[in-house]
Length: 297
Image (cartoon, rainbow, N blue to C red; front, side, top):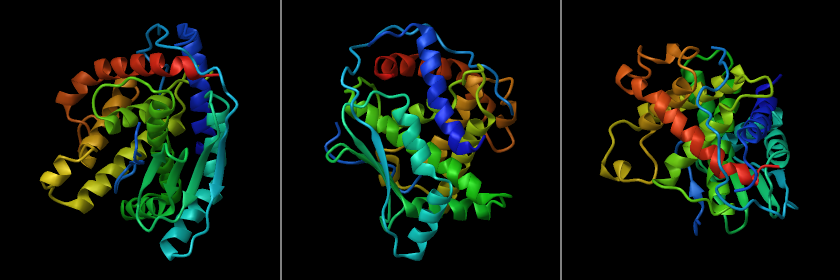
């Protein structure tokens, strides 16, 4: 099973998980951007799912679909990123996973495009999610520098995590979901939640675990490239890249500490944070199962 298909299976597993928990129903004015960073062990069954109660009314009109589109690329950076997306058939697989699971009230465009900067965003004004080709190219550079045996596969994993981050912005806007705290952090949580949802066999797919790990490594790569942070970085809408990397590792570890103990120490998750991660994941998983339940097919 390819990582692209695994990402779709994660959403299918999400439907099964939330259904088993008993869910029966429950804006941004500017594009929500990932700025200059992506949003981006054999795991056993998730240990933290609680029975989820309806949090609102579901979306009755499910006539919409997510429609993938690859725009032209002219720069060398954009052409490289476009090739990465197209060779993986990435946008098609991600669209299929959304169409099989979410009730969309109208069509949503999923666009790969040349942006002349590394970025990704959800735009509620034209109902589209954009994955910039340049972000894939920058990811490829990070994983190549890290010495990955297959940096293109790692790049696609990072793109998958980025997409689900933007999907977080999309569902918050589309379904008018109540959230507390910074939306960028909440969108990161959704990305982790979807990828770490057990599949039909009750297990988290190892490919999705690797996508979380690769996303965290990409955040670390961006942090190293950026150097020392200034006040503008610390006051921004996104948490600093290194914080986002630790968050992704924490949620992965918290979802199944026995399977993901390799993430603690040795330059990864500090023990002091790891001790909090099971409870952190439990609350995250519980909240998102409630929020998304009414909007799943």
